[in-house]
Amino acid sequence: MNDFNYGSYYKPPKRRGIFSYVLVALIAGMIGGLVTAYVAPTYLYGRIIPTPEIYTEGQPSMMNTVTINPVEEINVVAAVATKAVSSVVGITTVSIERDFFWSRPVEGVGSGVVVNSDGYILTNSHVIGDGNAQEIQVLFENGDKVQGRVLWYDATLDLAVVKVNATNLHVAELGDSDEIRVGELAVAIGNPLGLDFQRTVTSGVISGLHRSVQINQYNVMEDLIQTDASINPGNSGGPLLNSTGQVIGINTAKIQTGEGLGFSIPINLVKPVIEEIVREGSFKNVYIGFTGSEVEIYEVQMDTDLPADYGVVAIEILPGSPADEAGLRPLDVITYVDDEKVTSMSNLRKILYNYRIGESAELTINRDGTTRKVTVRFKEF
Image (cartoon, rainbow, N blue to C red; front, side):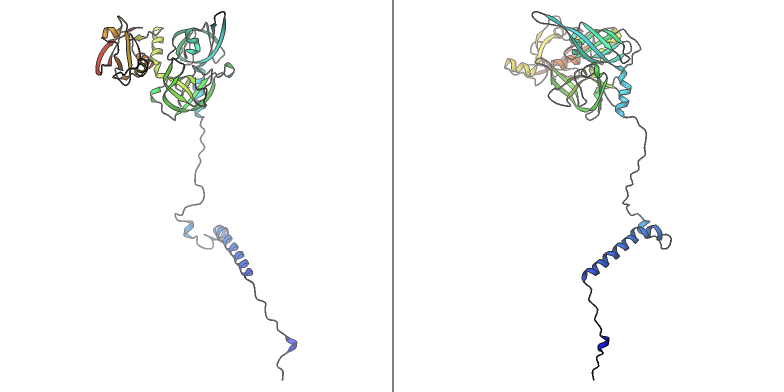
């Protein structure tokens, strides 16, 4: 007898593929992650179930924890400009340029800075034509234009003092150029490219100190401040300022073949000059009384070797001069004036600005390889 029931045929279930299990696992993982990351911390932890320790104890947070406290501060450069810009002036000049057969007036434009409220203005010597300008006009921030006259200038140092008949002027605060450091803020104010851009403010940093720049065949400017604050023709004579708005230098030159290479004369160099001019009405240079040259230059020119590695060599001693009275001789090499090292003729001239007529200084000299010290008493140049 047949035990099969054909009318109730049973079909075995089809086996599931591996893809189905993977899909289910992915969906379950996504749901679990959502519950763990959002639903549980938001609606369950601390209400229905206890909050896990990971959310309450010493674990690093993935959120940015930097706190910003807004404080209203004026920009440093803007503050420096606000403090100093009223003390910056424009200077226009008319000089006579002469040729073999004719002469013509030449106009010039530069900058200056007020260093005393009674009308004393510091600028570059080349701005006033190294004393040859026939006419000098000083333009103030309020639009006033006043005639100026030169009280003192030094073409070697490229500095000059101009006087105008005005009082109660806005005076710039002088800083200490011996204290500046490379990398500090530097702000320049002046009239680049003429009076159409009066009192332009540029900023940068102190790029270098004690730089030397060859101005022409015969003149090297030494001990300059280098800055990348933009300095252009017309900025000459304007101030270089530090972050507190103090004048630390007088802008003088730019290397035309490179960008960001401006130079300023340290303000400490001219402070004694300003003080005496304001006090006495003029500045009287002292001198030692010899013609000389740098050691290196003399050795090349004369094809010889001197016993000193640096300093200035006395070539000719002027009769009756402080050098003559101190007993200096030709070929003596001056290496120090008191504690100041002498490296060149222009450097020596800068050192002498710190001395007044009637004062004395001790010179260290090298004579035939032997170091000696002599005392000079300064006279008027």
